[in-house]
Length: 366
Image (tube, rainbow, N blue to C red; front, side, top):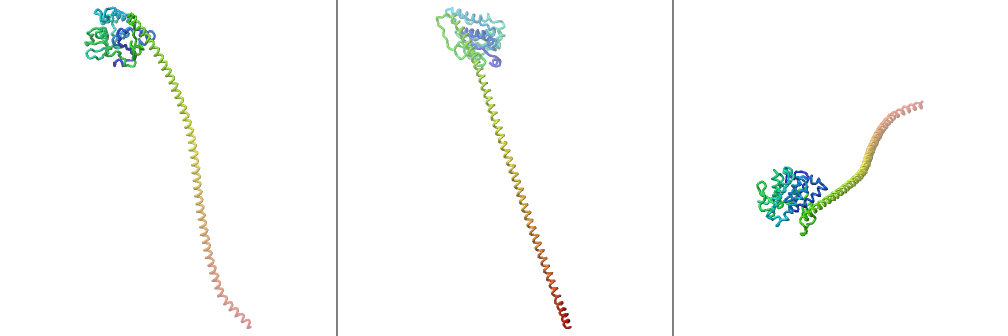
């Protein structure tokens, strides 16, 4: 399984179904007719029971016609015998071995290795084994016979592979590689496989066996065609959905871009308004600052003026006081001088008066 997971490409997986495997031949015929690269380009073919025979055949030859004719011949032979596959004269294992020896090329194991995955069930513990490497053509045939051995239906003694006995791979894993996401699943029973009937079909018992097998083959073709149509519609729907999603995404991106552009423009406008408001606020602050500075200057100038005025008033008062004092001093000095002069005059006047009177008296006497 690890090797299968590491390999690139897709897988074709065939469920075990006995003679109903003719369903796969109809389905593969449709794919080879309409999308051959889906079959030829497959990385791996896997199967259990009769599905492993189909897987081995297409992993080597990819020829549906030869396998169809051989499977129908084996089924018709078993049907013609009393007791069918349980007839003592019929051995399904031997018939399958003869067919594989007749149609498989000598280097079949080389083509099948790493490209074919066969599901086996180990007898002693019931565990599943997937075989992808084949040492020889005989080993490849033995692995296929082990995968197809259904107890009682095919016999009582299981065949061996590398010393151990194995039986029908469908008992432990009927759809190998189905867990891988890149596997295309085939089944003639309705279910969850990619190519399968929508509903379980029952064929009338009065119809000939070969007609039943032919109808199974036709149903496989129709179901494969339906799968291709639905896949194409789904792919187209997914593509349209993807286109619509891309359109919606582009529209969303456009709307988001417009919204972001509108938000950016709104932000720029708000930022511009804010910037203008901040600038106006800054201008107002500067004006207020200048006005404050001017007022402070005016106040300082007024204070200086008042100081100068007070200083001038003080100087004038001091000057007036000095002048008053000087005037008072000069007046005092003048008064003192006048007083001193008065005193002198008073001292002179009596003598003068005395001398005059003396002279007058003398004259009078004369």
